[in-house]
Image (tube, rainbow, N blue to C red; front, side):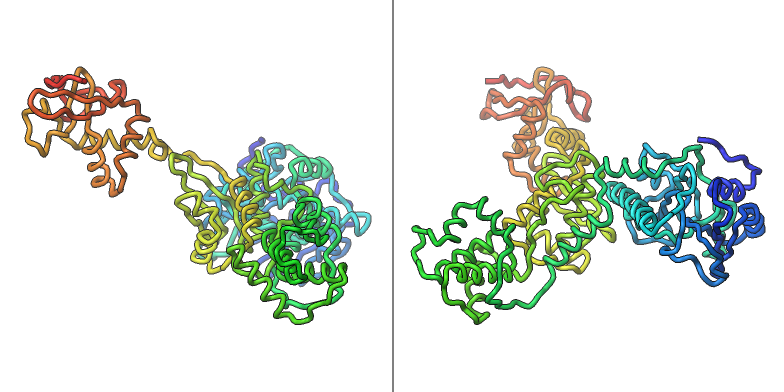
Length: 576
């Protein structure tokens, strides 16, 4: 990475690098604030001279090239851009300008979302964030509308990669991929706050330049879906969850692909569809309607799909059609109650696997792939999920990170339990996730578990670590006794030393934990902790009092004398 000379004309260095190899007939754009004026240049040197006169001003450069001067009041629309010099990213930071969003705190943090394999040619500090540029070996000039669409798709796909990488860190990222985008010129000022102008500077510079094809291959290898794939999946979810009025269409037909899939997967459904259910008590068509409704609710079909299923079945078997909507609604309601799930007017059928989207049962092996799975979950629930975190330990806790807030779950059952999940989100962002049929929720719940990013909860989160913390505090805050017979009943259970080992009573430790830590640990949990810690249980025989159960702590971890009040003296008790 090369350093930028302190006295160099930063804007000149930057603009020369951007537009090296620009065809002479094409125009570049410099855009100013607060006037919102466009300045068009065919000659790069003229643009550099203009930039030099605006070192104390807001100055932006267009990422795209144009064939004409669009005058001072217009910028070239994306649909008319004829070339780009590279790819770019706008990295926002947590600041007064962006106080609420989940964003990185520093430019160094923000750069963590950039792929290591493609270090940017420039990173520019903008005052409230940074811009990254990946310059091409030569400007990419479009020879057709298809070339323009392909370049736009590449830019958007690159932004999608960065968005997924940001989500893997729990950060939001805006995809700003339009070819008419303008970004700040280094060597100028950010004057959005006139009272506190901020310098726009080059953070880093490399000699790296790239072929667009190399970047496309990298995106493909990392499973980043293109815009069409993303839109198809997103639109599929939107259509499935959209409220639609129910209708009774005598010509309704279940799609052949869907029908064949269920016929092949479920022998019981196949017998129902062929009217071969000998186990069905009610052999009337109404009985078969109920059987089909039960199947539809169990597998997560929408109400409309269940109605179409019953109509289709009646028609192929020559049965009289029902024309009243309330008949079908009553049948579905009974099936819903039988399946212990309120009738749903929406379908949450998980779509078939799309290119670049991991299977629900597959645990992604990279942060980017887990972020992609979070995108699928987002489509299902209608709320953008950045990432889902598991804080590891004996009793793991969980955190759902959204763009606007973070939601904690104290246990896995609260995370994957549909009701608790829905209510937590409703409380946090005022969005009620519609009810999802149980079998489909199980699939989405598995996606949630597969998408987990695991963080170490520290010593206190695991059984041994928590036990050690509890015992260390107990020994530090509890006076030792020298010999059990020499103390009144109230203190006979306090810690003592026997043959070089600290000996404690589990019930005295339990009382201390529950009082000092404000917990309610049952005695079984306390003894389990001591056992995990390596303590051994024994009974101490005493001369005048009843034998007492004690736990001998491992001397390597808890040496006598290491805690206040501990003594090397031994009591007159003997282990049984």
